[in-house]
Length: 331
Image: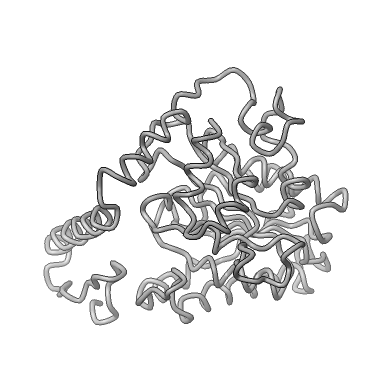
């Protein structure tokens, strides 16, 4: 089980400094929903007791967020669960998606659409615009980001949004990356925020991003059996406060980060034990970059075929090869 966790860390990091640091901050869960319950519930407990950084009791998420996460937020935070309305900006998001930056984020124009929606929501509900949360502190509030949305398959510019939320509002940021493992060339070490000991953000110290925890499933694009998922959290302070309890408390609760999430009752561990074999397949038996290119090529061709039937008057040759986005010339 430990080998499964450590091998996965090597798969989602690009340098040994990040990998070495993250091995102590990796836990296995059955699925992202289990990990999200632990994080959202832990944030609520921390906000009420003053732990976990800041006094913010609210949780924010976009209206295009995964439906299960919305229900989790409502369950734990009640009226303090706040939805940022992005739906009206979706056409602009889709039409403006262009090329990827070197850090794996989208361009500034797209990021600004998300950031503006979040900022407007904060002003309206927390900083004097009315509502049950008027006057509540923002610092320490939780922001949930989907790396790739489940219903609409839109990739969010999580690096830019997390940087804004952390630096401007002091928010805690967790990413639901259920669809990202393998489908994207992840570098979790670059996404996660530094711990207090490396708060200067030195690149060689790892943890140079602004995300407090990253959750991902193995049974989707990574193609493992169902029942294997991961929580990555590089900051010991977050692990010891917000993530101090799993969704189910059992024998492993007092034995460290990995054990508290792994030993949560009698269940089938075969999916998690299979991960070294699946990793061997992706690392050695197949070219990952080529496989991703094939997936995108087939997707574009499938969309071209459907669009030629549904919208025969539209020219979809402007479909880009870099992002899979329709250019603004295609109405």
